[in-house]
Image (tube, rainbow, N blue to C red; front, side, top):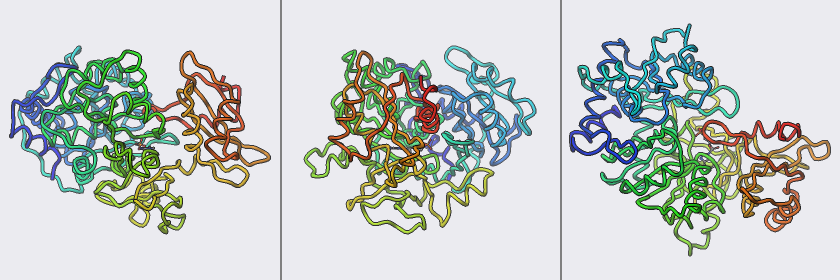
Length: 518
Ligand code: AMP
């Protein structure tokens, strides 16, 4: 089944229902959206002569055209390649080249920025600037108003989305996601994450090239609305004000975004308004931060753990897990990433892929309809990552006897000191419980005596300070002595990639060369 059918099904049921809002105002109904998508699909096939399975890149800040181009690609039997708008033009060029994209639809400023970097790309035709609220594009207008074509049939295993990983180390790889994968993700949203009514919406505060964009699908399936902030990026004040304007607001946010939203809501006294659900994930949420967020916005949280290779769909900590405060294992569950999504099997295995018993650590493996088909043009990495039919996530964790998974760290981030394994997450949890600590990250530094020594990088809240001795004393109350940092570095900010994930590789360099951190 072609995912584009979900859009046309919603449009047939209610032409006039709002499909996209830009800021507080309706931008397009389902009827309009479906018509523009069908016309754009026609242009992709006829004007640009694209054939089944060819790739089209989307390089956009959050904007309504993202939804149009995404569905038009599927409608036309093509593969969408959403690219993070914050990448350097050379990195964008790498993805255009590696994916073999024929076209790139881009918001005007990004179209200009990469124009000089597409010369000589084999098979690449052109950059098409899309229309935005402030900059109409004649060419784009022409493409979305031409002759419509019927939806091109697609098999379940045909590719729909090449999801380029954020590449915290090395070159990004293109996870091949099929129509089947994304349909499984869509259905598991309803089974495991949240219900969606037609009057509800998703507020795209996070980049649509990543998790927030994947969640377009369940909202289209439900005939609900996509709300796109006018700024096109994450501005806490704008997001808080949109909570007041729309009904049944859901959103996906990285933990760092949740934290910024909470800080701002506390500062301004802004309430949750019509916020229904914040789905958070993509990086560790420390328990103290989660409790602060629940105190601010109420019982409106669901956590997901996923990766591009099994998009948004490995485990889920549901709303009920956040609210059952009388449960004997409530605290432990809040610190976990929840249970397997209903469309995948998840297990924890040793180095020989043997399943480990409850409470024992191993690598997290995933199998099921949401798991990618492999990496685009990388047979070796595909075979390694999918060996034995299981996705090897590279994440370490342990299940408890109730089936709740606690994530430790990626195997390469584990610190081995004096022969003992130290999981940075435990130390970070301890440090984040200090009221003066805004953010922290823990890495290992080579040490002649211990092999590696634990180094903590700490960002304090504005106007606060804390002494290393106080943090040390705090650690003594919460974690084993040998896990305590041997060195504290107070820094203004943590290095992060374009999706806000802390770059531990860079921190390890900082740790090894003290001067770089100043
Ligand atoms: P990406 O493919 O860019 O979405 O990155 C996926 C990685 O982010 C996973 O392999 C995990 O290491 C991390 N991650 C995702 N969700 C969570 C979560 N809920 N808690 C902690 N780490 C997470």
